[in-house]
Amino acid sequence: MWSCVLLTGAAAQATDVSGVAIVPVGTGPHLVAAVDAVGHLATNHVLVAAPAALATELATVTTVAAGRWPDVRIARLVSPHAPLAILSALALARATTDWPAFGVGLANALLHRSWSGAWTPDVSRLAHPAPSLAQHARSLLPGSGFLVRQAPGPSVLGGEGAGAGEDDVPPAGLDRVLLAAQGSGEGGDDVAVPPDVVERLARATGVTATRQLALPGAWAPVYGTTRAAQVALVPAQPADLLAAVSHRCPACGLEQPAAVCPFCHVIGRSLVSVAHPSPGPPPPTPHAGLPVLGATGTNGTTGGSAAVSPPPAAGAAR
Image (cartoon, rainbow, N blue to C red; front, side, top):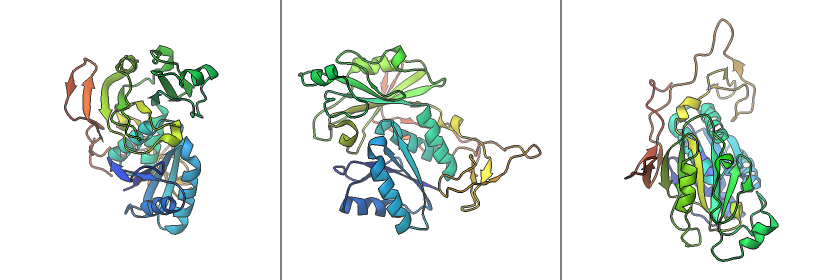
């Protein structure tokens, strides 16, 4: 078993979404609380993730936690993606496999094939990606709005009515689900991606469905404003991206899909040779997927609660 932590701004409350602990981070009491959260997850393997804007805070938390909790093996994940995409990747990876190193590899594989960004009316404090001078000036006008693409290829795509075009959402070669955060902004302001922008994104190649969900956390450190509605395209079948068994870690003793264990940071013993080919990836586990508020199919129909779920298990978990 393994656990996931997603770090967020200090203004947030600690919560849990689909088995992912969302933990505020900062200085003083916030740092202590974040370090304690890592050690209190009751698993020996913990993946701590953060958006790129909180990379320094992640390094501090994991360094202190490694000293405070020497029996807990910690892996790090820093991503340029929107927090919604990072949360989705963590939740889907955790739901798909109980094997720690395979979960880390799957989370990275999901993000590598994801697209994410946010709709915001204000780019005046946005540092990355950097808006143009004209976009800075336009954000001061009432009614302005911008679609910020964070990965792949960070860019501020345009102003009001200039949603993502075909070239702005490159195909990933697999089916993906469009996730759109909805609800109130961190400051209590209503914030949502305009329906026409959602529709344009939903028409991108490979998008099979649209899901809307509530996103907790404080993400002003990422966007420079509390008013940013995040969107993400994530792979629809996460189990298809599980890597094959290739090594065994000499420190924790677990099988892994890469030469170096992401938790123990040591080179593993190869389990693959001409005489002994890889048995393939471990079978996925039949956990629930990412909870959402509603589901809209590509035909425009809306249902009740739904989830971006991994496919049924191919067999018992190893």
